[in-house]
Length: 352
Image 1 (tube, rainbow, N blue to C red):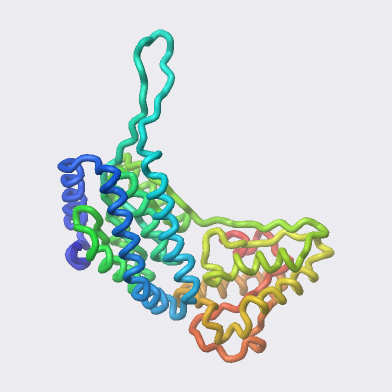
Image 2: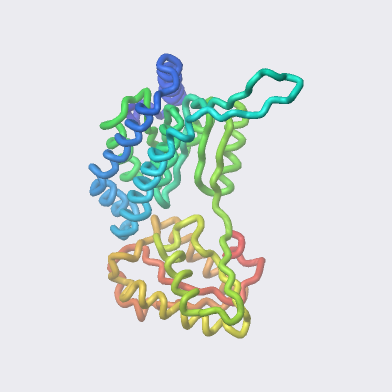
């Protein structure tokens, strides 16, 4: 792998891209057998080093549920790799298309070809899955790849770099580590395709940078995710499902339920059902090994400020599991489950 300190300049980044593109042009599109082999190498890398990934993510978060790391960060990628390997032959098969009568007796076929070198900028909330699943799809499509993992999870980024360096050559897969300035330089490279997962403001800057090279880009950006409960629904069932989706990874999931739309006369009943659901899922939250911490002090302060802003603007903030009920916090940056009632569009919690 390319050394992280040596690649912190644009020249180093460009050199890595040039090596990968030259290797791609030299070798041509990889065969079905080669792509399946690469996917199997990635799968083997994940399982061989699963404990390293668990430990690294736990260190970065202060505390990260082992079960959540195994399920959401590792097993999800392995399942995706298995899906890719099963379907790859069919996806690579040429597809026939109709020909207009004016061109008869010609024939048309769509031949699916790899693009070349794909850039991947991955976020911190699922730092392994959101780096390695895009890598798996890039490899399945026959591409080379460069990855810039998040600087907010440095131990995990270092593990990804080390593990992939053990299984792949630098001109196949390269991992670039560094701060946000490295990410900016990375986004300015003339990739054949660029994938970014993260916030909307950063996504805009990534898209602007990519546009200078006319680089095709895929953006997966955060947003608001409502849960709608119809009047008369089984609140206990709805609350349990919402609690599961909301509190996995302590809510640090782009598609976690963000707000609930419920009939006014059933609000109190829902809050009661939600509290019971949380008690069932996470008994004794303070010392529960399955309840994850907020990733760092900055994001903990950001979430706290959202609650303070809502209180100051008239919201009713209910700590469903209060610190008193939770007992002494044994993990850093535990954000207890909280419901914000009577919200308005002027509150920051409904904007971010």
